[in-house]
Image (cartoon, rainbow, N blue to C red; front, top):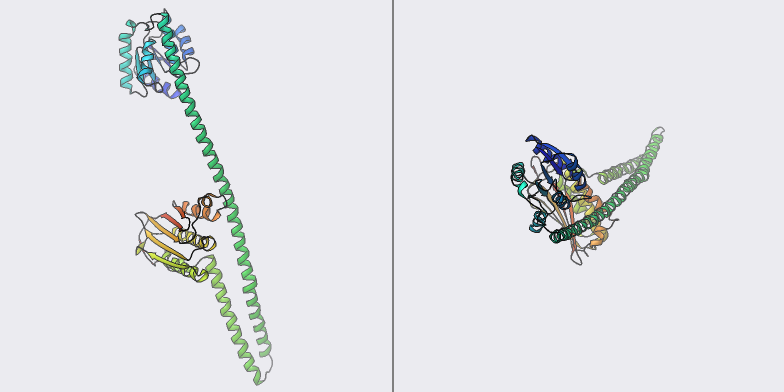
Amino acid sequence: MNILIADDNAINLKHLRAVLAAEGHRVFCAADGVEALALLDREQIQVVISDILMPRMDGYRLCLEVRKSPRLKTLPLIIYTSTYTSASDEQAAMDLGADLFIKKPAPAKELLSALRTAMREGPRRQLKAGSRRQEMESLQQYSQGLVARLEEKNLELEAQTESLRKSEAEAKKSREQLRALAGRLEASREQERIRVSRDIHDGLGEMLTAIEMGLAWMRALLSHKYAAGDREKLLERINALCGLTGGTADRVRKLCTRLRPAVLDDLGLVPAIEWQTHEFQTRTNIRCETKFEDKELTASPDQATAIFRILQEILTNVARHAHASKVRVLLKRGRANVILEVRDNGKGIRPEQLAGSKSFGLLGMRERAALLGGNVEIRGQPGKGTTATVTIPVAGPRIAVGEPP
């Protein structure tokens, strides 16, 4: 059997062609009603299956033109649509001469059953319009339906366009934030290098120079005979050099702690948090309370480092901006997460501060958490403080509190 499919959707054409070809039918395809009429003039078609919404000539008009043709008026015609699916749409199609009305997507069994029904009943159908007046009424109804569908489509397109505009604006803002963050991170790394370099040059260099001069003096003194009083001077200088050596060691430990606290590697996340909050309280005079709900935690070195660094950034923001007198730090474990909650009693962060393109610290925290599949949520209440909640997914064997992560 020769079957004509009129549809401008390539996927629908492919699906219908496969279903019909599998039954041994010969299939012709048209992208709209104009192409369909041209094929009907050239080929011996036994059945037409047509979509409604198509360019140039839609399925309604194609149905009317087929029924008006003396040669084609008894040709079985099936409407197959996903856009026009209301009862009035179906009635309009039947009034214009369609034999059957099927909603997409329909299973192959239903399509083949409709095809057999149309072949059996199609030759007995007549054009519903009957008279010129009825034909005009049907066309008017069809035109009104078409206009309504086009208006709906236009509204859908406007909504999609507005959504795309918003998405593009958000993407642009995200790109700007990421560029700003990358620049800030690079600048921060360079500033940290400068600080460490100056500490090494000014602090350690000065101490090592003093030690070197002291040792040179001792060598000079020991290379010659010296009086009894020189012994006391020698002991005094040795003591001074011991003090310089101890100071140098302290400075080295402070530099190493600034780069990465040893407690995080040696004792684990919980002791590192206790040490950091104690340091914060000592440095800022802001009372800091810690609470650990679980005696066991699961965290890899990367996860422990991320949580610790985010805590440092949160506490830095509290010291700089919150005007708080107290901070509470809570560490707990969810079903599949480690959760860090830091709450202060300060002035409360404002929404525009959270969304600002210059909130590099907040961006850095979120990016650090996102790298591990986590997130950072920050909520502020004016005059009641700010709460930062860090959630990091964890996996692997459980480790006890205090063990190295």
